[in-house]
Image 1 (cartoon, rainbow, N blue to C red):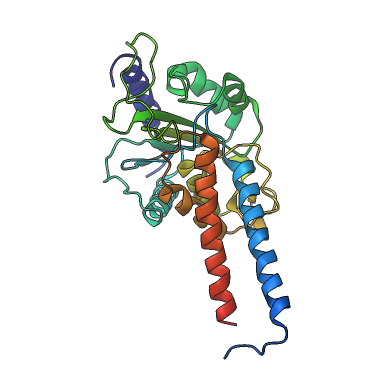
Image 2 (cartoon, rainbow, N blue to C red; image 1 turned 120 degrees about the vertical axis):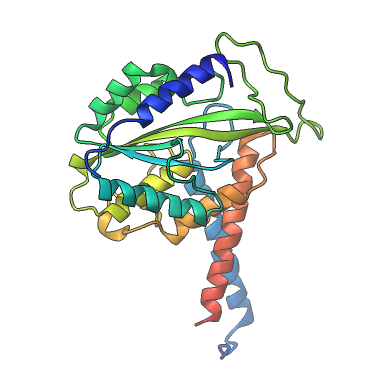
Length: 306
């Protein structure tokens, strides 16, 4: 990608170079009652999955959920060597679990985790120094300007910013116009506008961890939280307290020691869904259907073993 995008990527490379600070079957007691229990439970799963996805997903306006298409490379800055290595290794391990391929040592990071004792200050400084990294200017590549302001101003222990790339799946070229560039030529939507050739790829994500607000947490918890927001576009203000998710870490840390089965079910559904529907709502519905199906199967397995 040339022009403004290339300049943005150069800025990203400078961010990524921040220094490290250190190196038998039950008896049948009523068929109708048992059937009713199964139906009610199935409906409950559907509702909970839909509620979670509605709460969590935060794609740019008018765009469906984005995901990593190619290799990922995890970089960690401002943390001691052993801690930095653990974070990079654990996030890369999760990547493998959901079907992604981590880069080799020395790769150029597209997932950058930065430790600090002042999350807001770090965010403001980075945006001020390299605004084009956070705001490339292409439609659908990032969340709103208000969201960028919130990224800098909130008091969250962990904050993150995604850049996604609307790409023509037939040619692999960027499908939006960047400032100073000519408009791209892209394929038309197909099948009566129900399908689209445009896919949304994650291009890079920066995650800032305020270590001064992580007292009592271990590196596994921090790494798993970082992995969840690195591989999916999560709303920073999502209320996930009613779900068994690592995203509730800072509200109930004792209950979320690591990525949960629920979290992995969501990530695996995101990365296995066929997201070629032209409607962002329908794309989210595809993820919802896969996750709900897998949750029902898991419950059936548990029921069969008891």
